[in-house]
Image (cartoon, rainbow, N blue to C red; front, side, top):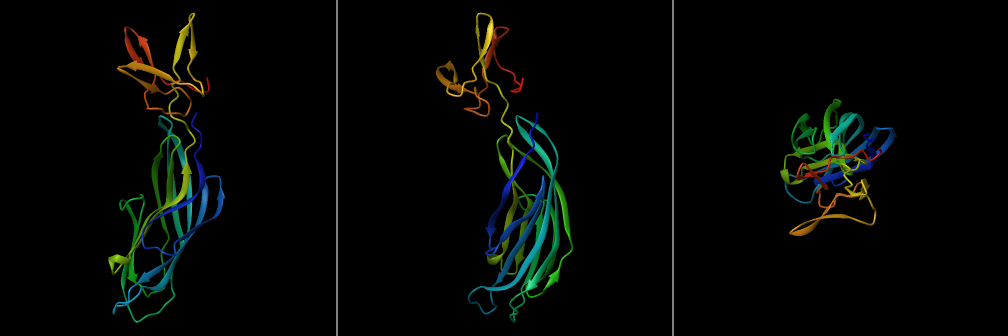
Length: 241
């Protein structure tokens, strides 16, 4: 039976810029989470010199995880619904410099599957429209993935100071890989090799370890059984049976 994925917290991967980036959870009910996103825009004066903080971008982001299903070998696929609202830019430092910018938001963690873009200039305060998008992701057995914010790219006039980040919720999949403990026949009875302090090996020129304990992959080789005159991978077993 597939266990539900778990939200372990938040995570953000800063790709470029976004020096004042801050993402905080503001509420979670089950797999329905709410995040606060804030960061500062930086730009260079037209005459050169040090970077200057021009404005602050903020948004509330709702993230809902739903429609979980078995993706095989302990992996789980689920749908992520993301909604940016109260999305705005607030002018902080009104300098006599105007730099164009374009905000892009992608559904994936890469620059792909664009969901939103809007252009303006770095000095303008602005209220942006809401942004909503859905996508499916798959997280492997005992794996972690980051979902919700997608990939955010604030393309400022000078590409050296763009703000770019990805991430969101830290989602963990507690399901172990396929369970194939191996067994041996003693007096007509198959005895499991599932031992926390042991292992099962097959000798083929040299010994290699096979999966024997729930959740331990070893080298990824399933145990073998002798069937119809040849060695065959043992079928997956239901660990609850």
